[in-house]
Length: 150
Image (cartoon, rainbow, N blue to C red; front, side, top):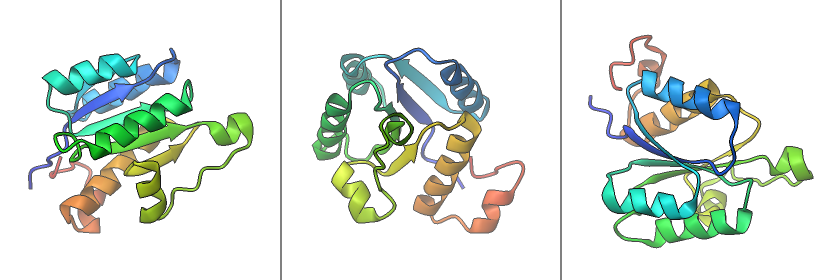
């Protein structure tokens, strides 16, 4: 089975050593990764490249991040993109953003909302699970070491 989600746009506005690990893990798994530091750069990539997944680190500017998620979800040319929001609001500010239900994620305009801190392998496994569900892949296929569906 072909895995239809292979190109990731990572929007991370602050430098972090964990981003290098993220890039290494996802590229090692066969993904193409575009990495940008601003929303403007993200729009440039979206205008020129085919992207299936956006990972947005929201911490540096929540207002701008939520506005970006809203615009992508409401754009007919981009609404197919799987949106992942990363947030450290819980550990930084004590604010817990609940996004466990479909309705809550729809309200946030993202398909997956992940609380930081997290490591790249954890994010990869979460993404793998979510995409497998979207693809209708049997749960036992997720346990395969060679990931034939990827």
